[in-house]
Image (tube, rainbow over all chains, first blue to last red; front, side):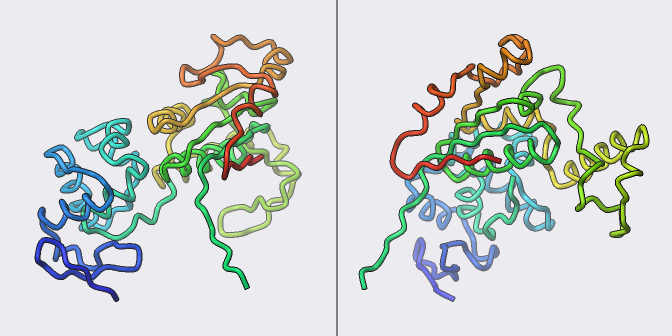
Length: 103
Length: 167
């Protein structure tokens, strides 16, 4: 498995750039991953990332619908935060595996 | 040998001409999936597919229990077509399909349309089929952007790396 250095910390990533170990994650790493995809993280972004991380820890299958019903943001808002990849880009920034759902 | 370089898909135009649950959901899942990948998405409903965007019918889609050789009872037991002809069986099977999908977080049709448009996807109805079924724009769900002729539709399908998909 490849490694990458974000914010001075070496983390394991898969060949698509998703972090292999969510426990290595922190906010500085997220900020740098997001930058690679041209996204500047705001507090709202972090709320979404924390939600995704918590859901992932519980073993839930994540979908954009699930995020849309989280009370944090609606689906339209999620698309605005992570243009072109609402679930994939947010999962990548959250340091969790690439989403395995089709919706 | 020259290396062939793949370039990513940019736009999909998906046509749905049938109104059974599986036909409509195949369209909606593919359309929503494309939007989620950042692919420009246009969905065109025609003929019986119009049921999926007609306010009166969209919540009542059914799956056919006759003439479907892949239809099996739970546990993989055979499901003879003659059983599918019994009144109520089609409704029961359809309700079961919907509940199974709901468990996978697949939303009802109206919410699915909203998910697609929330990400910038566009939904259209076919003018000819609308005339045929005596439908007006007001009969359609609010997320439907317009009623198109086939020529209008093709005019939208231009551009590099565009695919037309007929489900």
